[in-house]
Image (tube, rainbow, N blue to C red; front, side, top):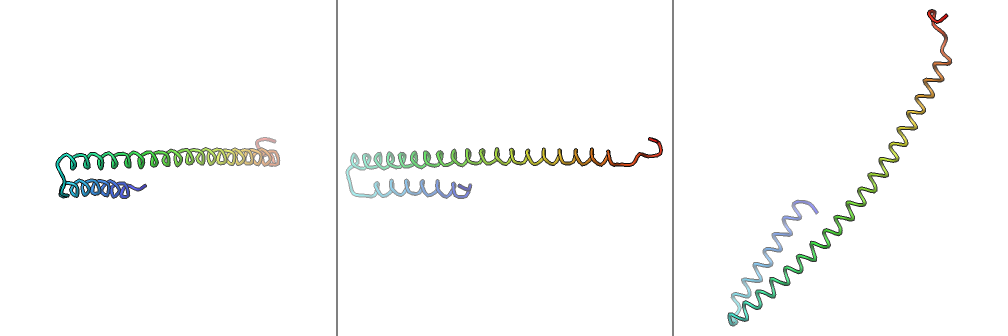
Length: 107
């Protein structure tokens, strides 16, 4: 989730909670009933927030582990290609040095 998306989510959640509290306060009911409704609304919102947090955490962990696995695979494949290239260059240099004609100093 992007930083903007996170901010929008929390703004929405805060607005939802504030709207619920205001609606309860303006509804015609006894003080005890209103306080009870406010507590129930707060608890419901808290539990929904926990659920969203748990789902987000699970998804983030999955993305992290998938990324770590892919990075490991890319590293392993890249390392193998580099080693192949080193071996190829080493063999080519060795072969070319054997085929080279001796210089006047070497004669």
